Image (spheres, chains in turn red, orange):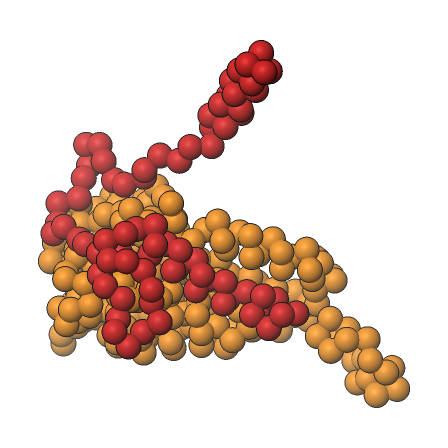
Length: 80
Length: 207
């Protein structure tokens, strides 16, 4: 079992090696000099809104945004 | 990790300027400044006329950021390019560097002096307290902090303008192209109204 699994894991890790995405926030010699900004997920959902993310949880905010984004897809929205 | 992007489908944009109007209304953009505008090519040429809605493209390697002498630009972790108006000196370098003409400058005063730069924020506000009056006054509405997407994309009547996470947009657009076809297949009477009855079809005009 290990004989097959090990080469498979090595092959998978090599195949996916280029799939990682680095953070692209400005760094290096030129950097932002202004006031710090907060993140959108650090806010609680509006009391009168439909938002359902957890304050401070980036993953739940992203899920919320992606779910909302699919309403721009008319094939899904009107079931066409 | 979400990376916010816009995509305008030129096969769908009908140059209604609804996105421009919605942006101005939502963000109370000053007179003379257009954060978004619609550009039309081959105007009036049947089949060749294309319109595209353009604003800041929130570049990953933004030239405005590279040339700014006071380093007032920054990237948010979700890929939106924002700037600090308290730091901006209104020099206009970013306008010359931007390939899309996104940075705008309000003309204020009797001599039309150039004010501080204003541009599309992807409805993400700026470096002030989120959803505060100060943020709205300087940068406009922070819809991302409300769990919403940019108003221009959300209200686009033909859904030509898509905005949000780039991966989701790519999936959406791919599915759309597969569904509708490409090239000449997406334009013309039959595409717009279906094959229908040839007897009731409008007569073809020749020039």
